[in-house]
Structure formats: C-alpha cells, structure tokens
Amino acid sequence: MPVSDPTRTAFLRAQPFAHRGLHGHGRVENSRAAFVAAIAAGHGIECDVQASRDGEAFVFHDADLDRLTDQTGPLRDRSAKTLDGIRLTGTEETIPTLYQLLARTLGRVPILIEIKTPGGDIVPICRAVARELDGYRGAVAIMAFHPGVPRWFRRNAPQVVRGLVVTEENRRGLKHDAARTLALAYAKPDFLAYDIRSLPSLFAAHARARGMPVLTWTVRDAIGERTAFAHADEVIFEGIDR
Image 1 (tube, rainbow, N blue to C red):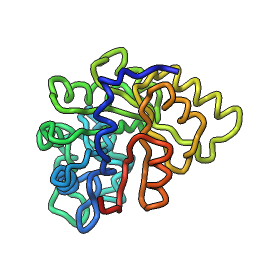
Image 2 (cartoon, one colour; image 1 turned 60 degrees about the horizontal axis):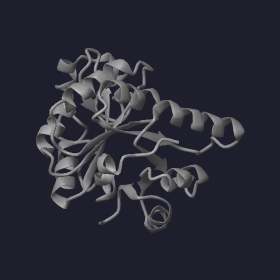
Image 3 (cartoon, rainbow, N blue to C red; image 1 turned 90 degrees about the vertical axis):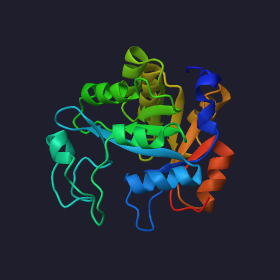
Image 4 (cartoon, rainbow, N blue to C red; image 1 turned 45 degrees about the vertical axis):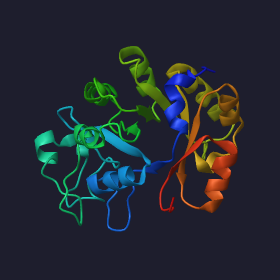
C-alpha cells in the first residue's frame, strides 16, 4: 500500500468538507451560492466536475442535466458555450465552471474535486482540471472512483494531491477485495475517500495505519459522525449544522 507524504496531505485533516458545497435552505448543490456559504462558514468544499463536449471543466454531479436544470440529456454532449447559458433549477445561476469556483475561492478554504468520467474517457477531463489547477495557490486535491484518474495525475501533474474514492456497498467478497487492492496499487493515491456505509473497514484501517488519510462521505447525521470520528480522519458532510 502506498505511503502518503504528510506534508502534502495535512490540509485534508484540518476541517470538514461541505459535500457539493453548503447546499440546502434554497441553495442548490454545486452552485456558486453553496460554495460562498461554505467559504463563509470556514468549511472545505467538495465538488464534482466533468467535461463539456469541447473539454471544459464544469462543476456538476449528474451525468445528465435532467435533475438540476430544465434541459435533458448528457452534459458531455453540450459545448461550453451552451452550458454557460443553462440555469440551475429555481435559481438565476448557471452551471459554474471549475475556473469560476477557483477564482471565487482563492485559497480561502481547501477544495476537493471529484472527477466524474461518465463517458469512460478520462483524458479530456483530467487535462481540463490540470489546466485550471496550474498555478492555483490554494489547497486542492482531486479524487475519483476511476483509478486511472489519480494515476493520470501522478504521471502528468504530480504536484496535485490525488485520492481514490472507495465504496464496499454491494461489493463484498474475494473478487471485490482483489479489485480494490489492484485499484489502489494502480492509482497510488495520497488519500482515500471512503463511503461511510462501508466503515468500519479493514482496508481503510490498514491505509490509516500506514499514514494515509481517510476521508468519509457522505456524513448526514450524528450516527454517521460517530462512525466517522472512530474510523476516518475527516468528514465530507451535508445537512448537518457544524
């Protein structure tokens, strides 16, 4: 198992991270308003990004636009110019770009960027994120379920802290254990972001024992907080007053 450099990852243990920004109370997930609220509260920001058709990084969770906009179909089929004009449902805001999030944050709080790869091709979004992070001076890390993403950053932008997102939900047994171990060896991440439903976990415990930070998502109540405090280093949370 890889051993993390504590000087690279110390910021991951320093504060909780607001899942998709501090949303709720009229603020839509992954919106400018949610990010502003997280910054004001002093929380880190967790967000999701994926690539437009022409390779720009947009902050949006779902593969399809249907749930959070009045448009339908995959985000990856739209150009950046088109996405710039699509409003988030119930707001006057459009879908933010990663550039806009970074420019608004300016290092005041750390950012966790979960890279989504709904089309399976990791290169366009990895390149887009690396381009936006080049020269950014704030604390930031990328993470993904796809082990190829942290591997890409290790090879092409090694200065960026990188994580592997892990769940054991419906993935138990020797076959899945072996796949998880292989993914870790392939990705060589600096940290793990672990499904709260999968804790406690021997795999996560072994990572922590080797000095690798383990964050956990998505913590939504006191029971989840107790589990997180016992088995992880920091939380990615939503719906909790902190």
